[in-house]
Image 1 (cartoon, one colour):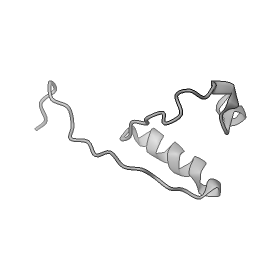
Image 2 (spheres, rainbow, N blue to C red; image 1 turned 45 degrees about the horizontal axis):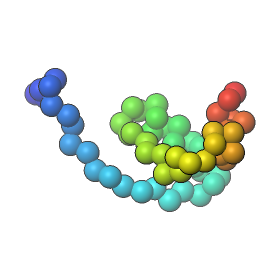
Image 3 (cartoon, rainbow, N blue to C red; image 1 turned 180 degrees about the horizontal axis):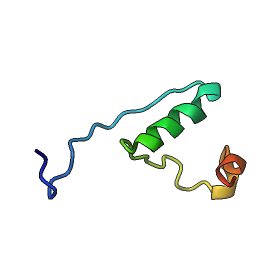
Image 4 (cartoon, rainbow, N blue to C red; image 1 turned 60 degrees about the vertical axis):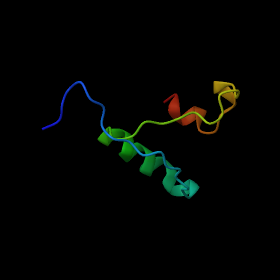
Length: 57
């Protein structure tokens, strides 16, 4: 039984995905709610990022 006041153990990892499969992989992980993403490009404007059009849909 997990304690509601304790965080789950986490591991930092880096994913290398083929561009064709990236959306479906990340979408599935997001739907499962088991990942937390870190922004590795905080200085890049939101409108200059790849896939900004797809996110806006």
